[in-house]
Amino acid sequence: MKKAKWIVLLPAIIILLIGNVAFAAGNMTNIEQKWLEFQRAVKDQQVKDGLLSEQDAEGFLQKLESDLNAGSEDVVYQKVKEKQKKCHNVREKAAEEYAQLTNRSKESILKTCEEKKITVWQLAKEEGNLEKLKAALLSDIKEKLSQLVKEGKMTQKEMDEKMDRITKNLSQGPKEKVPSGD
Image (cartoon, rainbow, N blue to C red; front, side, top):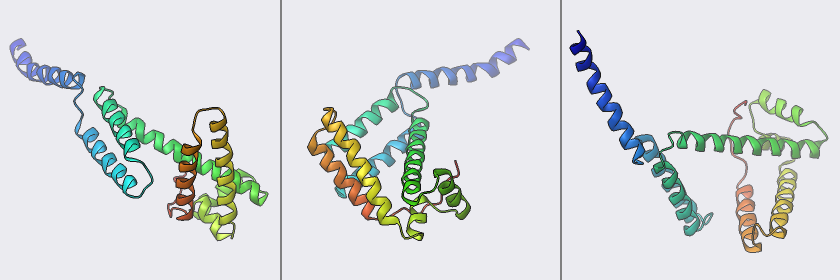
């Protein structure tokens, strides 16, 4: 009986040990490799569109590959959560700005968006205030970036490039995505 248990357990132990050795050696999982390929395609497109320099894209990809090879099993999950948090923050900021523009509360703006299953951008467009919202957000962003320049955390050239990208993105109009309801 003991011998039968060992015969069954031995392959499982060997698989676990090999898996741990591969993991410790920094080999990426299949999902991590797919994530890296996807990010390469995204960065290539951003470079083609002039939204990102080749240097910045390569730096991002090298850091991502390094992080993935570091053996942290949660890298892809962490990246997805960071993106979700960033989107949530952008949504909150847009709601705050739009609330100020329309003399309403942020909560009422978000509630209206959830009820109508639209974004803050779509609500502003629907109510004829999209250009005002864009201008308010651009002003706020410019103020924050100017402060970073004053603090020496960013150069004026970097600020100008970032403002150009943001202005270009805003001029393309809001994304037609339904809010997640977080």
